[in-house]
Image 1 (cartoon, helix red, strand yellow):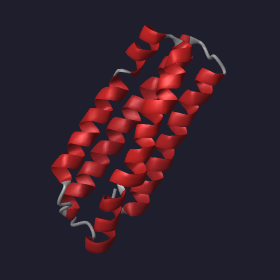
Image 2 (cartoon, helix red, strand yellow; image 1 turned 120 degrees about the vertical axis):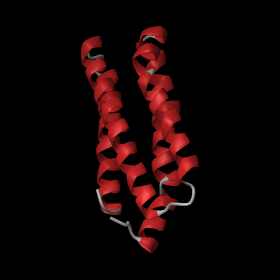
Image 3 (cartoon, one colour; image 1 turned 30 degrees about the vertical axis):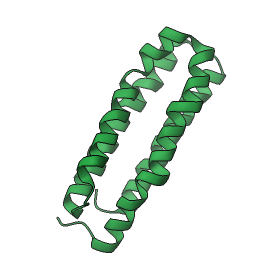
Length: 127
């Protein structure tokens, strides 16, 4: 992964996956189907954040450690999606997911990742 275009591509894919979970919930998909989407979100979130952190390190992003902490918190939340789904039930989960989890991911992409993209555009990535 070498530049902002790659990060943006991964962001779009992640949003598509988050939307897929919302769609599965709206369609009242069976629990196992919802679990598969959740597992895909977790795996892709971990992959994306690892890629993004590698780029941040190579570009010398000055707030790397703080941003990495945000990633760790978000991965932890993603890893608990199944538990939350089982704990609160489908309807409450969907409401929580849309108002908390989904919006936090979007906010992170729109606001927290913007300085990274700006930094890379200005400074490049050292190979």
